[in-house]
Picture 1 (tube, helix red, strand yellow):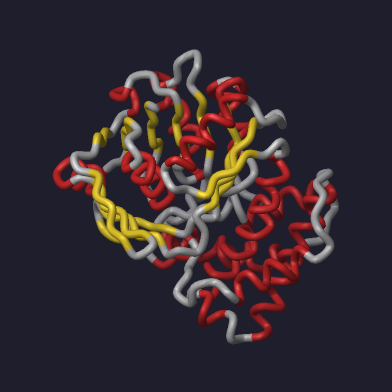
Picture 2 (cartoon, helix red, strand yellow; picture 1 turned 180 degrees about the vertical axis):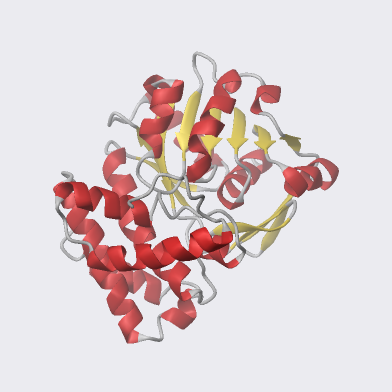
Length: 316
């Protein structure tokens, strides 16, 4: 299968390397030192106690160089979604599927508007991985699951084919007939975790030793669940309890991508995660006091180092 990884960061690099290792024809889109390293030495993936090397790696700076592909894994940061979708157009042929594995709850709609709804697949992953140095991806073993479905809600033949391709690469892949629910299930977890971890700047192993912090996680999970319920989603009654239990058993050193971006003074996904909760809750009249408070704090911090441009759309 001809696959393009649009954004070879921790998520795209992990899945792209696993798929290439399984024999698929994978092109990696990257930039800067990461792109240069892949062109020179290939891509190295450290995962599950083993090291996988893709060398040579077909790495490009422009997706147009790949030609039309069967599947494009769309794994750029949410703030780059629109520009990356426009750049991807030359690689999208009549039969190309674009699978978004991004954070947040808005990417499917943005991609459908720019590339056409018929090309877009909705995906969810909880993989915890990052670029630890140019050309090197580290995965921490938290989860290898990826869920794929049609944005309009069905399990199509192409979804089945892509799931089989992922499974052949040793990945825990499954299909869903309700991709919107799967995206929101992840959002409940990620919105709270990204927000708290970015504010605390400690790995989960440290954070969970403080009972008040885990109580905050629980309240924030319930705030997102209330928001999702107001938007027509359904959640298990014990979902917040189960998510807190998940973090109690997560690897001690686990951090979130937004936490790392705050720590390194990079642009952050604050508006796609914390800000999205505050905006939607405001429009629906849902109370999210924990998100309101931490959004204000994180927004000040992000703007102070340029991680959130002043002209970026926000709550206020």
